[in-house]
Amino acid sequence: MSVSEILEIPKFYYFDSGNDYSGSKGDFAYKIITAEKLTAKTWHGRLCSEKAEIEHEEEFERSEEGFKAMISWLEDKYEAK
Image (cartoon, rainbow, N blue to C red; front, side):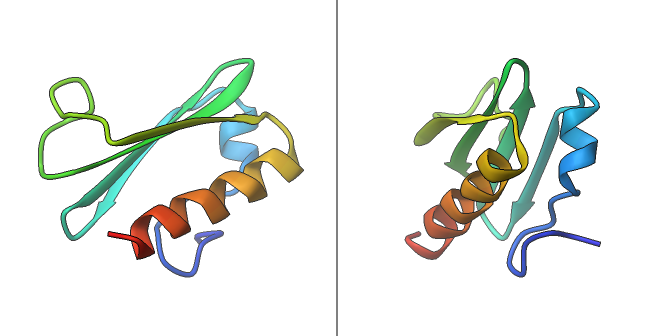
């Protein structure tokens, strides 16, 4: 079950366990990188994040609150496309 009503994103536990995640909806693509903080990247197109031109990138605290802020940020970027 996704925590977003728009994008397929696992629950916070997945990221707090140290996992990265990438996904897409239409031509909107995103990647979440887990380290000391959560880093979210977005771009358009079918290329992987290493080959794509990253349009937006933001860091969030690795906490439930930071995770919720990240979800909201990703949804805003998707809706602004």
